Amino acid sequence: MSQQQLFPTTTPTPPKVEQPRPGSRADRMRKPLAKDALKQLAEQHGVCVRPLALRRTDTTTGLTEVVEVPCGATLAAKCKPCAERSRRLRIQQIREGWHLTDEPTVRPDKPGEDVLALVRVRAHLEFEREAIQYQPMTPEERAAQVAEIDAAIAELDEALGETSLRGHLTPKDRDERPRRKRSTRRRQDTPDLPRLPVDPRTVGRAYSGRAGKTYRPSMLITLTLGSHGPVHSHLRRGAYVAPCECGQRHGPHDDVLSTPVDPTTYDYRRAALDSIHFARVLDRWWQNVRRAAGWNVQYAGAVELQRRLAPHAHFAIRGTLPRRLLKQIAAATYHQVWWPSFDELVYRVDKPPVWDVDRQAYVDPKTRQPLPTWGEALEALEEPDSRPAYVARLGRIDARGIEQGTRDAERSIRYVTKYVTKDLTDQARPRSDAQKAHFDRLHAELSVLPCSPTCANWLLYGVQPDGVKAGLTPGRCTGKVHQRSTLGFTGRRVLVSRQWSGKTLADHRADNRAWVRAILAGGMADTEEHDQAADEPDGSKRYRFELARPEDPDVPPLEHRLLRAISARIRWRADLDTARIRTATTAATTDPPAALAAVSLGGVTA
Ligand SMILES: [Zn+2]
Ligand SMILES: [Zn+2]
Ligand SMILES: [Zn+2]
Image 1 (tube, rainbow, N blue to C red):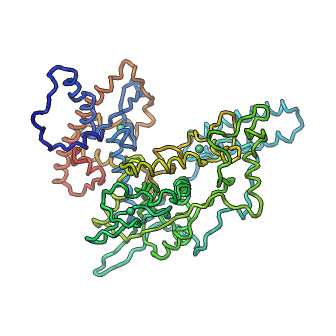
Image 2 (image 1 turned 180 degrees about the vertical axis):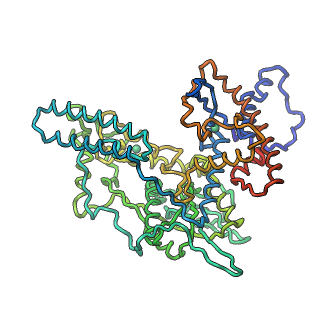
């Protein structure tokens, strides 16, 4: 797909190049594919290329109709227009939340009497279930009674699900195993930082300047992992290029850039482990920030991969914090991994422990002695002198003050969201042999490290993984951590704190629709094809939706649906533009959600 973009389009066709004979196979193969033309056109007009067909049944009239919804993909590899649309929504979300002046907190409604009644019954059932354990009866009777109560509980939970209650009353699964007690010593120790009670305030301070002007500064920060060894770098000091650690001066496109100066001493193991646990380190960072700052600091940002293949994160922060404090917090932030030790490989990938059917355990291939189980290995960690298997730390923080509504603010927002439509490893894809070797070496390290308590790789370190079963192959764990597309980082790519804008992405999407409706009101009917079924605000009760199957007789082929959608989009955009001009002359107050304004001003600009 990007292949085409790589060819310069302005190059004149070189003369005297052998043209394939007209009508030959080679000539036919040169013609553009109809399929590609359709996709390209759809992308140009911002029409989803993989729309879902939904069957909508009007419960009052009984009529059914096939409607389409965009696939809503967030990765451009799946659907460019949808990914671009969600990126624009992210931009809008960050912009709206960054310099909020009022607290966005939404207080939930009190539960109604109907909900409380159901919860009351649920409480009685829970009591009954526990009481059965103490009544004299045979195990079979007991099991039967418990099953009966569980059925009643399931039914009741379903009823509760239909009320306005949010979230789950109880955890989804009843954990039969006793919970492992964690001694206080093993909790993540609190770092050596100022500790203030956290004020519920989420809005930054405002400062009044001259002439009654109010300033509401915010910050843009970048969190980076520490060094895993020196890498070749292009070091620019003004017009002068400074020598790299290796002694040479590298140009900005040098093949060795961002690869280790000495691959044999580069700490690949730590690089891999830092990637795996980076998401947890970020969690700890935000906890520490709030505690040390003493107010409920809000953030929105994204994780991306540096060229040296380490994840790092950019965040917009609402309000400002002293730079010295931020540095202090970064230095004190770490995440302890309390797993059995995996410092040394006990077994090789080609000679792993074997499964013993009789003992239902993995045993040493020579001695036939069973390896310690996961539970036993954790038990050993209770010893007073035990240490965490790994401690992941934050490396560096860079912070910059950003003033509301400036070009700098806008540029920063784009910077943060630049790569959110790409897979993490997409923008750091290796190009030269040296970069490929670096990528492969890191990936090799990731493929033998444990990704989770259930990872088959534990066998390599002489421990049976949690929930052990036959058929585990170390080095072949399918966990996301081990994949080339993640390079270890499997956390969320986009991180927006709960009270950033007080809105979810879906809310922002609805805002945009409401604005479009307001513009179009009067001018157009409300049932344009672009106005997707999911938009209907009051339609939630009246219509029932189910996925239509492509083989259903009333579902036209995808190509027809795409063509129609493109046509509808072109007409809709023209109508919208006319309506905007008309509205602009009558009332200049309509404030377009910026993301949408950017979209509607011209689909081809993206
Ligand atoms: Zn799509
Ligand atoms: Zn170098
Ligand atoms: Zn794994």
